[in-house]
Image (tube, rainbow, N blue to C red):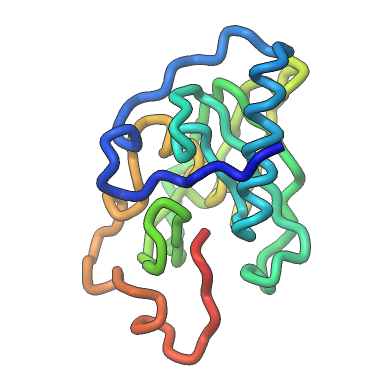
Length: 177
């Protein structure tokens, strides 16, 4: 339908806690999902949260399948996750480099739970209940943080591991997440 503008760090709407989705299946909600997919694909993202396009609802989308920006990442299935609940499975954290469409041109080393369970519903209101690890777990945590007004730089433990992609990784073609 439409490629939406992605809000950038500094916009106060990115700091708000998103409201639960109450009405699935409406034409307006379906249009939102279509716009989110179009926007994410246009920007070669791995995921997108509704607040990133100015919609304060608890909905995220994600998918990674042969994405040139993530050549070494395992596939992550196409998912619409509404009103998510994340439950870490253990205390094991793993550091990984992250970027964000709302923080363009930058990367940071972010600790995330290695394994977690997430629940919620899909676009048709069917329950989702998955246990995931690795890159899939990282993507879910990154996107759901947006629903609570958290951008990944707040998770970085050592700001020496945060900077512009071209300075951190000279010669590599890293776009934003």
